[in-house]
Length: 271
Image 1 (cartoon, rainbow, N blue to C red):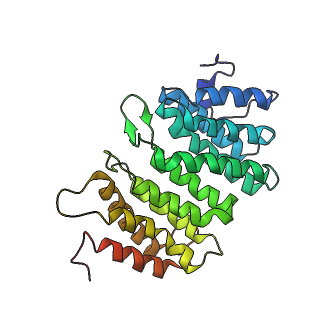
Image 2: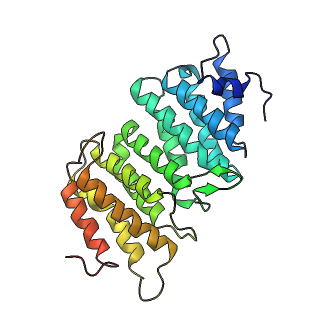
């Protein structure tokens, strides 16, 4: 852990006023170190909260690419809390890059996308909460950054939908119990809202789901299949109701019908 150069607990208590006169590079170093902490107060309540506030305000624009690079480096960190919080920071960086064009080179965003795509569907520790570590939420946090990538790199939208499908169908002993299904559904909805997707692109990712379910049969529902059905059911609701910000995607009806077709596998009584 870094020394408490900036009395982080006091900064948090005061609502994260920006420490004027402090080099952004030093703040980036300290925040990046704190974001791997197993202490949720340090990692979440202080470091992430500060990074999110100051990135959104443009206070860290001069180190924005560095923050993104250091975040994706944590995708291979040996400790889950470091890996699980990396996408949260990356989401903030990408959101700022969209709000301030030119703040991040496109090559950097593409580099981050490659690292994210390698990590997200393969992360093994998908617990939402740990009594000691606090919030982990690799699935939900990854979903959030997937939606952010759709804004920053709209040409990757179809791939991002497939990444979400690969995540929900990945082998796992963990059943979604912390609304991971809803966070994935929201991300898929936000990706579908980005203009320009064809109907084929909007539904093509469901082929990944269908292929994963091909070998299903009688017997208990494995956790990964439960996660998949829960996510699709949540997505169907999101497609019908729309999102508070953005509304209903242009291909919502056809996607919802394809989703319902998959859901008839476990819910055979559906009309």
